[in-house]
Amino acid sequence: MPLNMSLGRWRSRTTFVFALAASAVGLGNLWRFAYLVGDNGGAPFLIAYVVCLFILAVPVLIAETALGSHGRGSPVMAFGLAARRSLLGNAWSFWGGLACLTGVLILGYYIVVAGWGLHYAWSMHSGDFAAASARQVSIHYDDLLGSLPDMLAWQTGFLGLALLIVAGGVRRGLGLFVWLLVPSLVVLMWLLIDFALENGDVSAAGRFLFSVQWLDFTSESVLLALGHAFYTLSVGVGIGVAFGAYAPDRVPLGRSILAVAIFDTAIAMAAGIAIFPLVLVNHVEPTLGPGLLFLSVPYAFGNLPQGEIYGALFFLLTVLAALGSAVALLEPGIGSLVQYTRLRRVPATLLVGVLVWLLGAAVAASLSGRPGFGGLFPWLDRVTANFLLPLGALAVAVFVGWRMRETLLRREMYRESEGFFQVWLLLLRFVAPLAILVVWFWSIMPDRP
Ligand code: PHE
Ligand code: NA
Image (tube, rainbow, N blue to C red):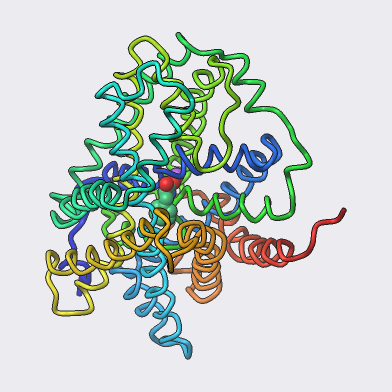
């Protein structure tokens, strides 16, 4: 019985690749990556991240999609199905559920930051930052974060958009949306880079991005690099499983995902090229930490000719990228609900939407300093990226690498060469689980003086 009948299928192989690309490119590329690189010593962090991306995150994402296309269902079902005859059957289904929950936890703060993006697109466009001083820019940011109703309005708008798309279903919602999204991302990025090269200080940006601060690169940085590699490809929350389940036949899984990883990295680099030359031409030290995007960037654009237009485009890009990821984060949970309960797609979407909204409201409350909500935002970010995503990845690596029969895996990967298959299996079985365990262990060890 084709289990995914109730959920649908992508129209083409390109749609499958675009969907994974839309899921991957997000706030991680534009907001999270930039401040992690800044906080963790620059180039050494960059190298650790790229290594983790290609030897850990890529193989695990391939495994997720292979699992999904084999099980042809939601994450919960894929694990359940493939584990049916194993003693740990129910425990494995539990991983699927945990993955869906992790998605909701990420969304809880993701919609908050995306809501800021929406707000900033609007105020850039209205000229709020024209010739603004650094002080005015920081007052603007503090005002937004201090006002719970404002934040709620923007993040509710953003979440509403994402829910509308997901409610449309796999073909008419997600499938159409990604065909609009991916080309728009490329065009917007192109315009912004062009603007930055024209108006910015490119050599200062190069010096800044490739500078090396060994002292800032600690053993915790390695964990952050690992976590971000999974985060940026959206690995460990069942998106690969869900999207793989909707894949048409004869998709070359391995090469598709390699392409997605390269595209995602290219967008992260392009974002650096679009941001730093502008920030540095104003002779301000780029703000490090999460504020980078919402302090340095509006200031830089605000003080350039045509800055309101390009600044608005920049935040439009941010919001669109975030939308692709938010939609992807919603799908595993909603798909699982549709398969496991009698709920139809629209009520399932609403149910997950309410959960995310409530969590998002709690995060906004914590940021605006309501007592009793302290520090929820950084906590959610850290726990999901550094613990829950690697945990999900570990489960997938062990399950697909060790519990699924090799003949089944070969069948899912038949479009790839034997060499590719062997390297993939090696990375999945041995390298990924060991690396995750070692990095976890290492990160709790104290730094040498
Ligand atoms: N990959 C997304 C980004 O880079 C974030 C994300 C993480 C999305 C995990 C889904 C799952 O912004
Ligand atoms: Na990403």
